[in-house]
Length: 273
Image 1 (cartoon, rainbow, N blue to C red):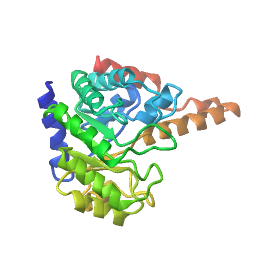
Image 2 (cartoon, rainbow, N blue to C red; image 1 turned 60 degrees about the horizontal axis):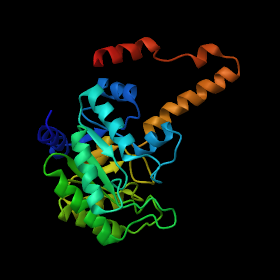
Image 3 (cartoon, rainbow, N blue to C red; image 1 turned 60 degrees about the vertical axis):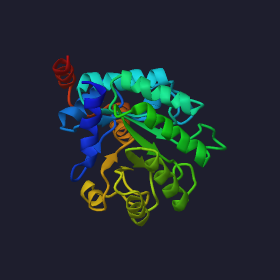
């Protein structure tokens, strides 16, 4: 599928009534399970990907090449639009971000997220102008071939400033970002203010506001157009593994080996080949 077709298919999910849920996969089989469940698009998770490689997220520990190949794999096995959770765009400059966007198009991605993070622990958020310039460069490179999400990580990085969050998101929309994203606003009231301030640009929510987990229907009711899960599904799978490990340590083989069975995995892989 050409970039423009992927763009239109993915963007349509954001503009239709109710929007969509964008679950995040971490390998081929998890992507196939999500596709088989009926999801119409999937996302990568920079945190889950880093963890599978034995690294930590948000520190430039995963290269652009690694993430691009990972995202391309998910797209190839599922034949679904894939949104890349590409941290700060993998580059020191706005021009580097543009190069990453072009590479994402070349790898068959339908969407890409650009954060205002730095990867520096004691100075985690970029200055306003720098952040906006990077999103502007991403949009110019995208040229209707890939959906650009402009993201501010104020809340994730301990900067609970609603006014600055809205200022950044509004500026990202002004330079052409098609989707906006501020993970974990503190409460529903703040989320409602964000959605209203940037309307009609679609807003992505990571799971829910920080203070309570809402249903998809409740999020849709306040105008959210995309719900993503980040590394939450990966952590859910690890919970099952931890429980199985504890059962095995107790000598309970039956509990440790209960599950879908590897035949199911083989069936999913066979259907994708």
